[in-house]
Image (cartoon, rainbow, N blue to C red; front, side, top):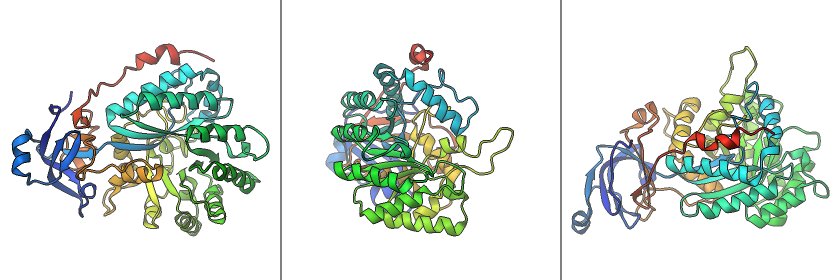
Length: 432
């Protein structure tokens, strides 16, 4: 049950707490009023005009925190919720990789569609407005799954903006042979994002040059999974940045995970961070999934948190974001595409507190900029797509999961009832 009941239509939310950066002001948290008319924020101060004050109901929110709807820029909607039929046998990265690959046999269009729609319903109920998903594209999956993406874009238009990036192992990418040329064409025709996962291979530079050949041919943005390992010799992030600079590639480049940099010698990490900043790469960290997978060895307590060097990258001028990643699949057994959970856990795992950096933007404006989505804000004229929490400050916000939050879309409260897992029983109980 929501902590408060709000009417539809015009209203003034008095005495709300908002991050100052979201209304273009300096500082941390401030108290203000938000006036909503015709689905839009028309005022963000405590001094409403006489006309506005008379014409809109005034509701004392008692300091409740308000955020614009979130951007989740790195997910795997095609994998989501297969755990009941495809559990990771040991929680390891290789266990996840092998289990998902075996489950590909079950990924018909209808199977992917049902699980993807379930995941989007969860994200919408939690307060997400824009999402990018990676799509496993080998094993003849690209055509079918990108077809499902088109259907989901049409079905969810006006609720969640959806982007998709293909996901192909870097050693399977060749300019003149193999499946990648056909995959790149599917991505281009769908107007989506070209993606790959990189790890050390002897011919990495050649494979990246072939990858960027297709990106430049079709004028596509790109999104990589990078160095998702605790091996300090895995430095494909360096090669990506160098290749972007050498080619003068101008489209947006996003790199996700970037785990190994955190276990490299400090001077090596500093060199790579400098290159990343110079190349203008966008970095997205996936703290929940990486803490689950990284440094996992049977019978041994993990020694590190699995995440990238978010603070150092941000200090170097890199656009840093955080996102959900996987949900109830072999790469992460948990998760619900809830960006408040991501923000809560990222704050704890990556120590985003006790700093002057407005890290709230790493869940809002930063991912929007990386993906080209509209920037979430609480300024005048912004859509009244809001997430309202029963908390009056950061400690209260992160102390509880905010299960009673209120979500407004176009200024009106939505039904936040989450779908029951039982809806998927018939699908995820199937065996390949």
